[in-house]
Image (cartoon, rainbow, N blue to C red; front, top):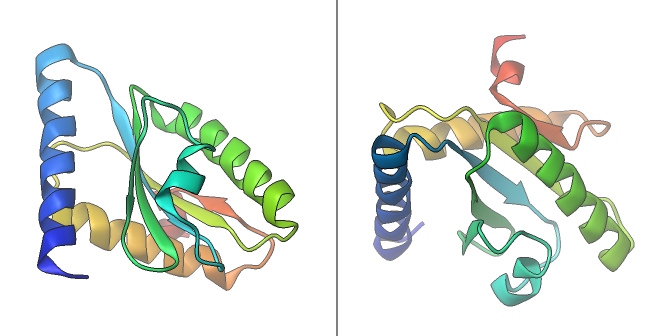
Length: 136
């Protein structure tokens, strides 16, 4: 990941923390993996207008489910994966979700999401996971 991408993630995470501190509104950070390349414009049609989306590389996308606690972000992820499955007629997408913790740096957020994604992709029957998978 290049410096520009990391800097942009840092800004997005800080803005999300500011919103939380100012208005006590939670959010959930997520990492989406999709096997086939997908444009941000195309992918944005499957997420809510309030959510923020950023492409990290050809197959990974950083998502902030704004104004959404983890339970509802899980449901939003289910909808996202379901819609991508229908559109692409395959089941290669998976999502890693991490709990919202304003004490984490953007690097901590990214590293945890990558760890969750690694564990999620080990099981072909699981498509969406939270940080709970790290403690099993």
